[in-house]
Image (cartoon, rainbow, N blue to C red; front, side, top):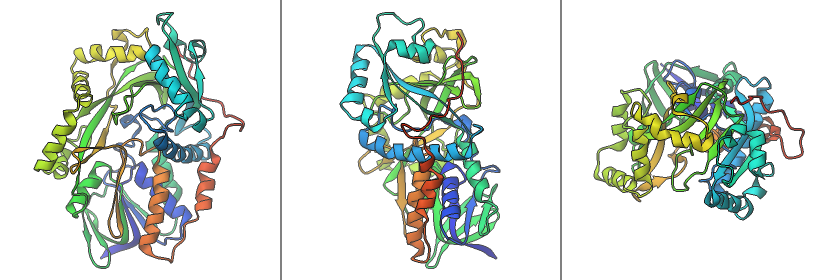
Length: 460
């Protein structure tokens, strides 16, 4: 006996959960199942300890082009609108100021150009260019102890959402799991997906499931499953483990990012208060290449080699990427940050770029924080493909979602829902107006009455 569904979603992180929420609430698809290998929803990369907890809009991410920022902005506003409507008590998120900080003449000139000439000031009406005096009013510890004649500029906005994506994923699932035709299976590992003429057969530890369409939203494992089914042959992964340092006092009122090199796909070093503990300030992330698909799970090393495949194209791609004159020094520096005693001394200047008065004894490597982000490698061009990857088959989608995948989860769910309905034919409809009313239409616009940001008074 096997269970039959119109749609099966593999993976219960923020991507899979957002698709379940969208399909179950806003389409007339009759039956959908979510299958998650862990005992809990969002236990891996979406867990709040395993990511930067940032809702990325593209306003302070200085490695984004204006075109990418326009796309990410729309996706982030969907998530923010959902949070404004469904989390008034701030159990899943906190709302604080955020800024990107430029220090010194060269950085200030770059940030001014980005704001005035490249169009980011027009794209983000709430984004303000503020000088040293205003920075000190919002983030006193960013200015305190800094050379008085050093030029400073920041782009600041009140739309700084610090998010527990694990709780948001759980909220999506809880919203629909009791609906007729919705089944959620946790603690159920998928062993294989088999494509037949009539349907997809999903083999799990708990038995077989059949579906007319399937979406695999299993992070790094999505490409592993795709390759086993004959898809994604021109792709590999560069798994990057992120880590943080922390100071056990509230040094910042919100998020403070530094400028990002455009060629790097990794998040810029920043400081911010932890989503559930405003008295703990995190600094990071660092980024270390690791041969596994999940942080701290050595069994996923063999999963990595399923993706890497030990073929010549993969080796040449890795060699070409890691030989880059910007990326190679970056990778080496980040290896040093993990060395006991030496690591935090090497990372301290990055912390002091944000909060100058922090001393070596103030920070420690944050235990239990940091996950793996899969950077997508194109083995044909021998280069990194920046952003997310989506592989389509006939009736199946594979989603590989490095940052900002969580920020754009509802936007991706909207796209995937449209595609799934195409797979299933003309018998189903997607109430997109209702979807937008439940999400993006709740995002507070310029001129709306602003909600107060959460108080996190920074100490000395």
